[in-house]
Length: 158
Image (cartoon, rainbow, N blue to C red):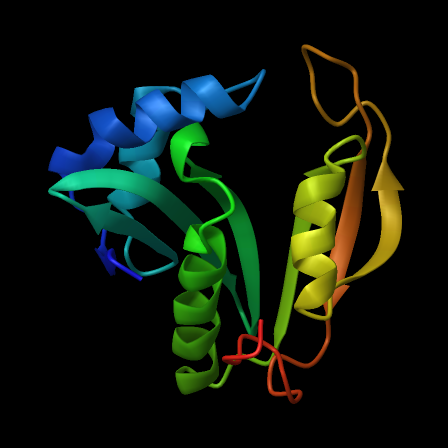
C-alpha cells in the first residue's frame, strides 16, 4: 500500500468531486459535499492520498448507534488496488472504537462489483428501494451488517 488515509479537508473537495463525477450518474454537488464535510458531529469523510492527490474517498454518517455509508469512490486508474477496502477498514475500526456495531448502506442494483465488496464485509441484502436513483430510475439494494465486530469484518484477510 503506497497511500495513506486521513480525514478529508475542504481543500480535498475538488479532487473528490472529480472522482464523484466520473463514478456516478447522479453525483453529489460540491455544495452537498461541503455541507456534509462541515458536519463532523454526525459525518466523517476520509480520503486516500497518494503522491499528494486524492485517489479515493469515503463518507459515512452516524445515526444513533449505526454507521451509514453515504458515498465511496476510487479513481478509475486505482481500481483493484485495495483503496476502497482500506477506506472501509479504517472507517469500521473507527466505528468499533465509538461503540458502533451495525452498519447500513444503499447500492445500485446493477453495481455488482460494489456489492461483492460489501458482501465480503458481511453485509446482507434486506430490502430494495424502488427507483432510488432519480435520473436513472434504478433500484437500490439496502444492505445491513449487524455485527461489525465479527471476525474478518474489516480485518487483514480482506
